[in-house]
Amino acid sequence: MSGQHSVVVGAGIVGAATALWLKRAGHQVTLIDKGEPGMGASFGNGCLLASCAMVPVTTPGLIPKGPKYLLDPKFPLFMRWGYAPKLLPWLMKYLSHANDSDTRRIAKSLTHIVGDSLEQHQALTQGTPAAKWIQESDYNFAYKDRAAFEADSYVWELRREAGFIPEIIEGPAVQEHDPILGQNTNLLAVNKNHGFILNPANYVKDLVKLLQEMGGTFTQAEVKDFDLSGGKISAVETSQGRITCDQAVISAGIWSKPLMGKLGLKVPMEAERGYHILFKSPNILPRYPMMVAAGKFVATPMDQGLRCAGVVEFGGLGETPSRAPLELLRRTVRETFPQLEAAEEEEWLGFRPAPTDSLPLIGELNSTGVYTAFGHHHIGLTGGAKTGRMVADLITGKATNIDMRPFEPGRFA
Image 1 (cartoon, helix red, strand yellow):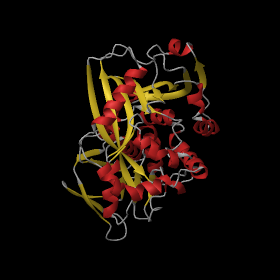
Image 2: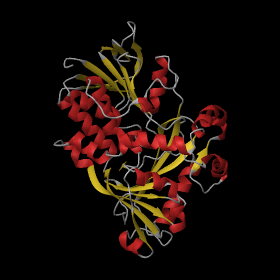
Image 3: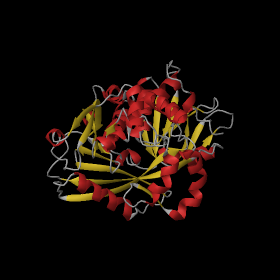
Image 4: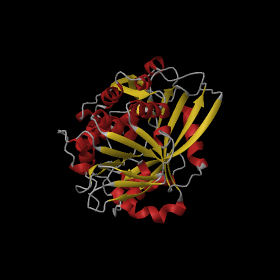
């Protein structure tokens, strides 16, 4: 397979990992992005390598609770109501998976993508300057009390079945374990063998730099079309001209949807609007990254300060942030970390690619030589290194012991 030329579209974590594994397999590689590497959803995530994050949002019981959540100003789920009619067909399909058998099936497949996240990122970066961004750590779930933890018992049962069994810390021992937490957190579920990335944008930039040092190419351009005139990919048409290739990989996150449209495939995927607030030069940091259950946000001690990321909003790709999600996030951060003070606060809005069945699209489109690697919803950074390796293995004909059928890119056709 060496001497083959692969074009990878999208320079986030998934595209960068795919490009690197292909380069190591002896391919010529051109990575294309309309922006700078690592500046889309890869820039603003929660920085986590959350191996235990294999349970989808659509768990049993979501349908009756959904409307109540949307109307509760204290719950971190928001809707731009003007967008609701457009969202409805997607939402109906999405919610149809909120049952036990679908949840278990989805969780089982996602475990293949995220279960060994830390090891996969370490394998991707071993012996390279990019390895310095990876930090091994615990991943803590912070709860108000035992009752709040037990309300999540279904999700913890699925995690246990996948091998993620938390250590429980309760009462005053919680603040001893992590002094940043206020009195309204009385239980911690501690997950060992996790990790986080100190700066996801710089991490991806370093991976792309590594690709270039190995002889790969990065081109800043917009993809206009794909040449499949002989039933197989022969070139990618871009704003910088035509790039001939033997394979193409679409790994452009939410922007993969219009690219798939050019290939005649309508992917039922919506943009989930995700927010973060970065507290710069904070007076106190958590010892380890944590998920604050009450506010459904992640707090991670990264190199720029404390990043608190979370809150879900549906409302399309409009670039203007809504105030309510940010205000709720800010309020729950203050309630959880009462001693926190920061020199400066920086807000961010980005778009997570959410397919109706919560599973990424990974695989080849009908022997065309076009491969997909997108649709990771909340697990893009976590599953990015593994996804890149899986796609590179498919392209280079390396055997895999993973059942790829659930990720089949043509499954919505």
